[in-house]
Image 1 (cartoon, rainbow, N blue to C red):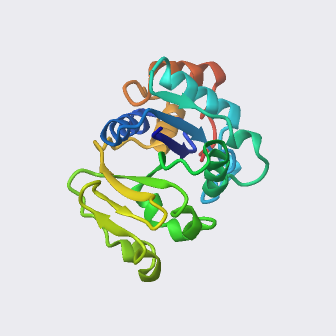
Image 2 (tube, rainbow, N blue to C red; image 1 turned 60 degrees about the horizontal axis):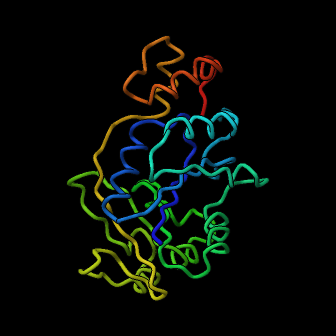
Length: 219
C-alpha cells in the first residue's frame, strides 16, 4: 500500500491544502491521503490555536466524500506536544516495515527538519513527499540535512527521489501553488470579509456556526 500522512494545524483547512494533497496523491500514486490535525504544534505558539475538535471537524467537512482522503484524530488523543516521529512510529506499528508510508510536508517545513524531534531517525523510517512550487530550484540535500546524513541518500533517476539505505526516499513534488494562508483567512473573517473560494463552503458554514476567528489573532 502507498498512503500519505499530511500533518498540519489546519486552522482552518483551505483549498491550498486540498489541492496540494490531491496532486501529491496523483503524482506518487497514493491510495489514500490521511489528514492529521496536530493537537499541540511543536513549532508554533499553541495559545491562539482553535480547539482540536474544531479543526478536526473542519477537515472532516472539507474532504467530504472524496474517495481518497481521510482524517485521523490520532494526535488529538495524545497528551503533550504532537511530534511527527511519534505519529510515524504509531503508523509503523500498524504497518510493520511497509515501505509505502509517505509523510507529506511543505518545502519550508522540510528546510527546517533539523529542528524536528529525532529527525535523523525520522527520515530513515518513512518516505518524505516534499511539496515545492512549480519552477522552484531543488535545494542541496546536504544543506538541508547535513553532509554526513545526506551522504546516505543517493539520487534514483528511475524513481526521481533520493533513496536512503533502508529503502525509504525523499521525493520533491511540484504542486500548483495557491497563495492561500490560514492566517489571512482568519484575519478576513475578523474583518467581516468574504472567504468564499478560499476554503470549502462546509468549512465556512462551520466557522459561522461556531463563531470561530471572531476575536484574537489565532495560530
